[in-house]
Length: 343
Image (cartoon, rainbow, N blue to C red; front, top):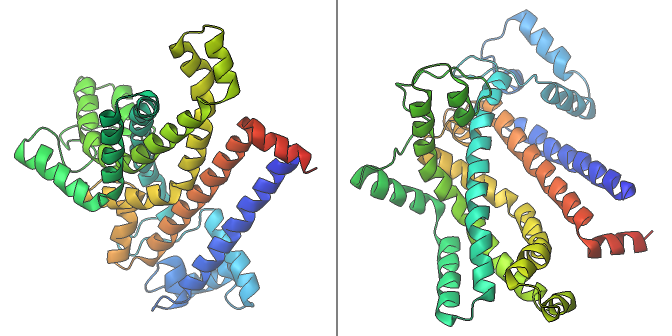
């Protein structure tokens, strides 16, 4: 197992290097001066130019330039933003928690509702209910995320006025950032309105979280249904039924844990799509995360922000995909059997 672990670690570094090589090559294609694209300084002094050339080894061959680029970016030297004139790394740290908060809340919604509905779809004998669930999941998977986000905003935000449609919290609440996660920071605040601010933060989170949760929800329902159909026909489930165990206990203790293994694998596969959907959702709802920050940088031709945004999102997707694959292999007895048999 340790050998497999180190192979996954090597795969992470190799994939990250390839991704950074593509980003390094793309940086040289920007229609601006190289020092400007790397540092974000539009009119650098002679001393600044010398420092940039030294940091990124611009007088050396391309291989040394690439390794210097990797070293600078991974140590936090991402330049300054062309528009805000602030350090890009500090800006990235300030927007990452909002994206994590939205993603985790969306994933929680997808799991809490997707797994039980998938189990119901697998176990029910009511054909109309089965077909209704499959039709809803197919429709949810097919709906464009931008159309869904705009429609939900119009229905529940503009027409009914039930939910806010932009931002992370009402600007009237002055919440001091501690962790960067708004739901946590509101509760940690020592102000008299912290509960009201917490409620308002949840209200702001509902529409973007539901919009982003549709994709993983539909996949989780369908994969859970297929996995439960397969598991319920296994010999050990039949044996448990023959011993007179209650159906609910069989599902919770034996069937569902095994059915969740392919669900975990499907989550790892859809991370790329989930991230791209998240960028669209953040733009629609003006959510102050990495996605809206990156798109704003693209519109404003903020080259250092573009590099930092792409780098952070790509590294997170690569890391989480490999981590989920490793966990899936570690908890799946069939995979472990094949793994040990290959040694």
